[in-house]
Amino acid sequence: MKNAARQIHLWLGLSTGIIVFIISITGCIYVFEEEIRDATNEQELSTPIQQKPFVGLEKIITNFNAEVPKQKINSIRINEQVPNASVELSTKKKIYYFNPYDGTLINQEKQDWLVTVRKLHTSLLLGETGSFIQRWSVVIFVLMLITGIIIWFPKQMKSLKQALTIKWSGTAKRINYDLHNVLGFYASFILIIIALTGLFFAFKEVKNTAAFLTGSELTDGKKADEKPTELKEFLAVRYDRIYKMAMQQYPGATTSTLSIKKDGDLRLRLLYPYNWSRKQNTFFYSPSTGQLLRYKLYKDFNSADVIEATNYDLHTGRLFGYFGKIIAFLASLIAASLPVTGFMIWLRKGKKKSKARR
Image 1 (cartoon, one colour):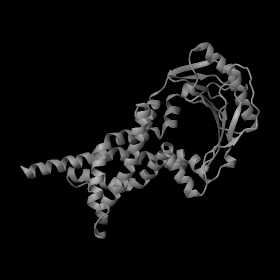
Image 2: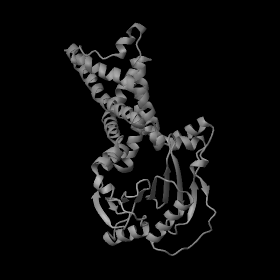
Image 3: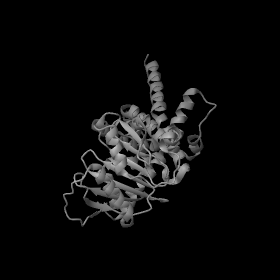
């Protein structure tokens, strides 16, 4: 069994090592995405406090269209907790920051390097082809973690201490072996959770399995009772109406995000204060009329919905605050080191066999 696991581990590792390294190192960086943005974009993220109400999306979108009439809005993000936080409008190539009190443009910038990091992590910057490669590489990585645990397990219990410690006084070859073997074992269980939660995003089958284990099914929400309408209104007026109605009916959100997806779907997400699973209300609208089609409220979540809502925070370590983020960061860093140390072990063994043959 160990020999079979060793062969599987070796050849899967050699075939996907560089991809695992890229996914791991970018995930390691993106764990602290919020903190990095807060530190680097402080001027764009807020304006001087004024005793004025929020100007509304109509004014902001009108000003945006006047500034860049040919650009299409991909998303609008509003920080409801901080009254002086700038409103972020994102397009395919840029982010625009608007004053929440008068709707004027504060600044604009190209999609920052963290967006590139995220795209590397999710698609290797190769679009749908990269997403396909990334998904199956993570599946292979889970198999490597399982086979790695089998290989690590000592034949005798008296060797357990040796298998759990790094011999820093040993040769470079021994230290490299221990870094791969020992650190890989310690991180493997956390990495399995991170990998499986990542696969939750990628495969419907993983979601269905989670739903089956909870004895419930993921819901799409409830259909709206609104009658079909043909409202003729400008885009700025439509988005403003959607936002205001949702905030009046479901107040208390900390963040509001209006997204226009690739397939044309219009979605509004309202995120509320939470400790464990995300408290998030999601509304889906007709992009042409702004009519509410369906909605999903956190108060109606079943067990499968709670798992789906918790998945992102568990994947990134946010579920356990800064402690969880640090653990996710260290585990991802170890994951990035495993292809490197594993390749060096294989290379040294190859040289040793070559010398023996000579």
